[in-house]
Image 1: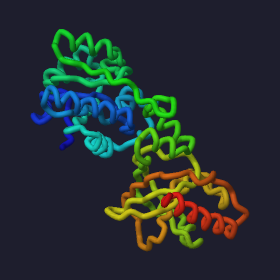
Image 2 (image 1 turned 30 degrees about the horizontal axis):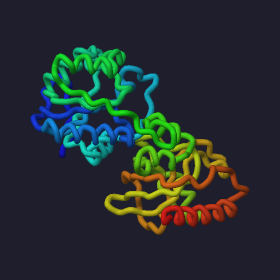
Image 3 (image 1 turned 180 degrees about the vertical axis):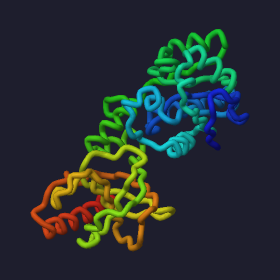
Length: 309
């Protein structure tokens, strides 16, 4: 298994050619995306070759509509890893450029998918869109595949608790703090990436040192206190995360702080991965430090319980 970042004008690596291809942004790599990759594996068993996921970096929206740009659900590295864990033999990351985004649906099909990938089969969802301004849809793809004698498998949406699995559903759940629904759609806990910086060190003086994450590499859940698992290199620590301002001390800036239960040491400058398991409570103001400390003790106890349930 491997991932490759390439320009759309370059030939695909040989190991990625003559296989079954699924194209998409795949942000989040949720269970709907996993169903596409599973269908690709079925096609590979029939037609041979590798199962290849083709995605884009940066997100096409961020190039075509930078005014709408915002944090994604997954980093590019996580997206590649998760697609491979879902069953893709290889992942091709196309560098998103104006030229690529201005290819018509016909040009993208012929110049990228046929000429450079030599695809034997395609797997896509019913709401697939491609080409300049998303002019092409799944019917367009079927019409292009037919004369080329390339089989196309259309995968129905995955429905969970009465609603379709989608990146927008995950995003909406996260923004309202419902990390458990997000995990249900993703098939795993949501993971946030960030690097620790020096903060006010107030948590240390209260007996609950925290690591402040800034910058963040993907979308932070909505304000609240959460039970989390924190990855420091190869080590995994139980913890509690606070997202939002600190009104008790008159701080209005939104921050992401994580407390690693039982950890002693210096984390400044380290990259952390934080898996969100359960939302524990809203952020709120306390009368003073003593009330806050009492609540933090409860938060840690609740986080320990949530992580063992």
